[in-house]
Amino acid sequence: MRNMTSSDLFAPPANPEAAKSPWFQIDRQTRTGAYTAEFKTDSAAEAVEAFLNHSPAFEGGELRIWNHREQRVSASVKWSTEKTDFGFAIFNRKNVFHDRLLGLIARQVQMREEIRKEIQHTVRMSA
Image 1 (cartoon, rainbow, N blue to C red):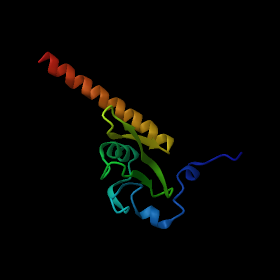
Image 2: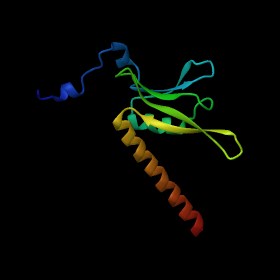
Image 3: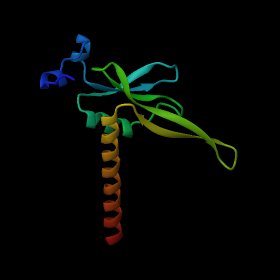
């Protein structure tokens, strides 16, 4: 096994076009099936936070984080359907992180949001 230097870890992307564009992009699927760029950033944390706060254009529509440097989807929305007691179909969104680091960031963002909500609730109850 060879030793990796810092230049190996931060090597430029193989695709020169990817180097010019932001590292992450959130794409939203339209009803026609095309994808539109909704948000672009070089920050993984900003990309994950925006992904968690964005909603698809329609129920069952796709939302994804595209990694320009690696030319792959790093996160996407998976939809499942369940029927209510009245027979209506309900869509349930599940965020799937194909990149382990982005999944860890998402957990931290969600934990921070839960703490923020708890603090707001406590402040309201004591006022």
